[in-house]
Image (cartoon, rainbow, N blue to C red; front, side):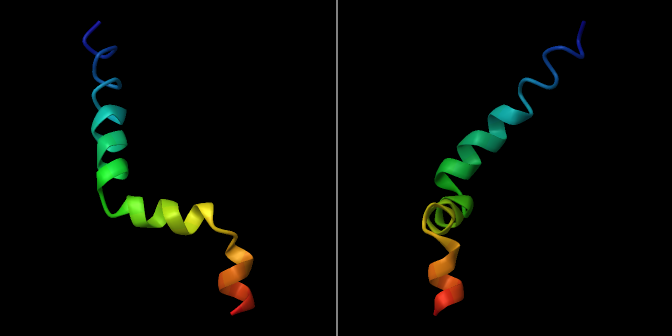
Length: 40
């Protein structure tokens, strides 16, 4: 039963880190078409 709440807090810390972490910059690049980078 303790295993149930275990996988829940794991993805929780991953979400906030991505929103305000170094992944935020990656998200901006990901939203933009990769062709722009390849085209350049």
